[in-house]
Image (tube, rainbow, N blue to C red; front, side, top):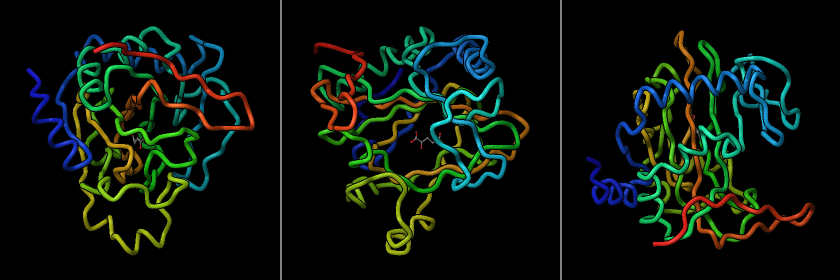
Amino acid sequence: MIDLDRILEGYERDGFARVGKVADDETLAKLRARADELMLGTVRYEGMFFQIDTASGSYGDLTYGKGYEGPSLNYRKIEKLEIDPLYRAWINHPVFEAIAKRVIGPDIVIYRALLMSKKANGGTNLPWHQDGGKFWGIDREPKLQVWTALDDAPIEAGCVEVFPKSHLRGLVTPLGGVVPDNHLSDRTPDMHAQPLPVKAGEVLLIHNHTWHRSGVNRTTSPRRAFTVCYMEAATRCTRKKRAPRVFFPVFRGA
Ligand SMILES: O=C(O)CCC(=O)C(=O)O
């Protein structure tokens, strides 16, 4: 049984919450196998976004805009997983529907659905960041990300770390994204960092404005997670250079 009142009270207060184990072993096995198939190219879809990981672990060494670079288990990100039926079914899980409707309202779309992967003895340091701001190109700030561990993510595997309550002060820069150095020295997040080690199947809620980060994976197993940003269906894309995005609808009605 999931005590949503307690979870959501903690979420509003701290900017993150542990939901507990939601995915059973059969579901996890399918999602992991599909992650491998997508990386190895044995299952392919038009329009998925891929980013290969660094060899150095350094965020500054990431490359952008290259897309799928051939079979490899060293992809760091795969986006647009709503295209895949197995991941789409997970996005539509009734527990997430209940959470999203309580946090956001009746009509809900997603901004993104992505796999964050750190291969065994690999991965990249993801610095303190917030998931919002002008960089996201939408007319209002989203406030709910649901993160599912596909593998165990102990501290040594580069689990997510949060700066509790940091969401309460909103975006540190209008642009959003990685927190600039001057704000790091002001707010000293490292002194407040709370690691969130999890077992496979556990779900975390992470507010978009909560400062969060993750390290490299020093274990001999992959550390994969699937994260979905839910938001109000009324959200509009503000980008001007290309046709505005139309967001994938997931839940409708009270
Ligand atoms: O899985 C992680 O390491 C962090 C995910 C994250 O920061 C994000 O999705 O914004």
